[in-house]
Length: 140
Image (cartoon, rainbow, N blue to C red; front, side, top):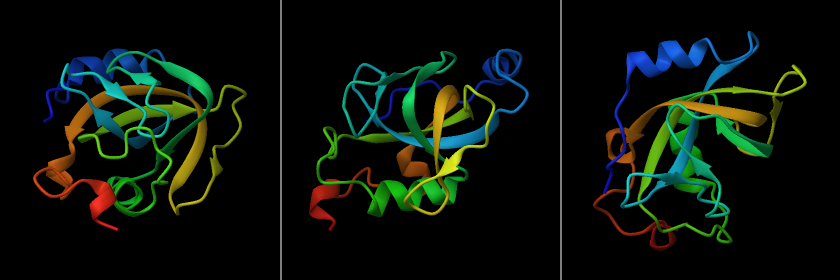
């Protein structure tokens, strides 16, 4: 069940003023919790909130909706802490703290970043994701 905030142009405008000039837009698939919060599917502990910067190394996100859907449907490890949790997609400003270019990793279109600032939350079901069908582990 997706209970997160929808896209907000106010958040987007305020957020753009808070990010470095080299930041780019990315998309991240996350676990959508019943309380409306978002967590990393992989570790189950990293929190993501619309309008708040999350830092750490490494953070991963994709350059397009298409790439994040492919990643979220087919490329997650069985070791993920929240593999079967309901999902959402976050649209984020992302960047490397040292200003370098993001490093591509693994899945085509996936990048390693140091900071993500979510500006919108999209329901996974709007992308043809898994809401209403069996958990991820049963799809393999």
